[in-house]
Length: 580
Image (cartoon, rainbow, N blue to C red; front, side, top):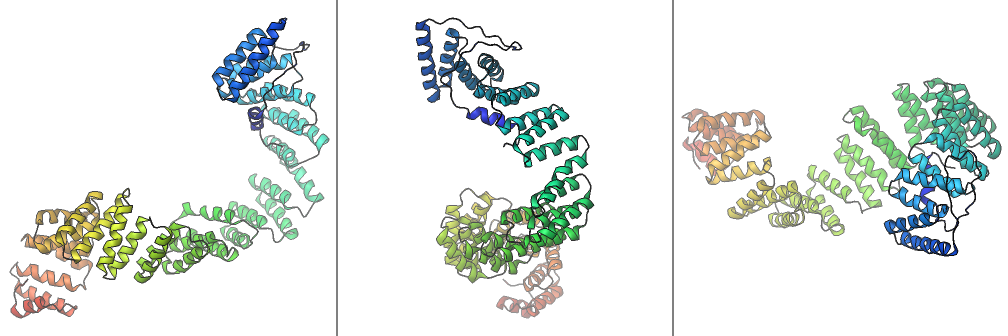
């Protein structure tokens, strides 16, 4: 039995083609449609049959326009041809010409009031145009024609309820139950009516009876509890569910329902306890558990919500140890709770169960990179690229790992792979070209390094890392200092209070002989990183050119104390003057 009046439309769409129809005289004195037939000659009958079959062929070939024209010709010759009316109505319905379809179907049922298919088609039309009063009458006729179809009774009851004829609708449901017995649909339909009438006691009556008759069946308890809970009778809902739990202590759905009630009572601790209990049952499908956890996402970054989702995801991994999704969501929640190191082995358990999810591989590599596990990134990267060779991001991450290990040529190869594969991802291209620029700088190929940096910036003018590095290397060479100053200034706008970026800008200004400005920026850098030998040495260099030799020597010595031991620094200290 269907659950809504949409049944009418579905039935109407699936009705079979009717090739012959009885052409009876209309004896219904209350009919509102008059169809005037005419005697057909033998030739007329032959022409009608030929046109009808041609129309059916056109319709089968999905030539609806041609078919409609032929069916219309059938009706011109034989105005009482119900099969033609029906077929033409179906075409008009598919064209959303609902009024024309309605007129044709009303004529068809007037000529042939015993044809069940015509009435069903008319029901679909009335439902589509929301003519509910006429819909009710159609189902009366369908019940008359075929009283053994329970859906006709239930659809009639729903139509009456939609008209707010609640007592008549209840009577229709009673007739349905008398003839076919009670079921969930009739009980639910009556409940909705009782609730609209404000009769909660009657809405719960059938469910209470079902519980008495079958106290071990969970569904009736759940429905009754939901009924009470949705009508602000939480305590009654709790009592029902507690009774259900006595008979079915291992039913996860009962615990989920209890969680809902406690949530509505704002007893969040009890709600969470019930969720944990429900999640511990393997019988509760993992899809439902994942859906519940996803409900926590909008509440992030609330630490309590993150913590709750983490604990539930941990339980899923214990309850469903053979499902990769269990470990994936657990890993995700560990990441949300900033437990990055712990997330790595959890994700790897997911991959051990299913290594075909690229996103999990990428997440693992990112986490390993964040933990400076460069060898592991390379190992996992080579494995994932054997499975997914065209992944640009994986190539880039392996390149970063090699670069961090000082293996410049290997890094360069992976960065170039990332560029060739990631041609639609501007951010990735910018990062990969930046890696290429760094690599060529290490190889002392300034021309290719500069070209790569320019490509990086063209793909993302706000790549602060590239802007800083490119500016710094230009300053070291004393080239394009205006361009270097522009890039370095922009990098500091993008990421203010970053010591290394401030140091770069100070050094560019130093190279431009703007010593006072350079001093301001190197002081900013030192305020954000007080233990950097490089910053201390740069400070000494800058103040030397501001004629403060005493402070310069002091900071050069500080740089040495912080770990710098270059020959140039020793010369500065010994000779008390700046040296390249």
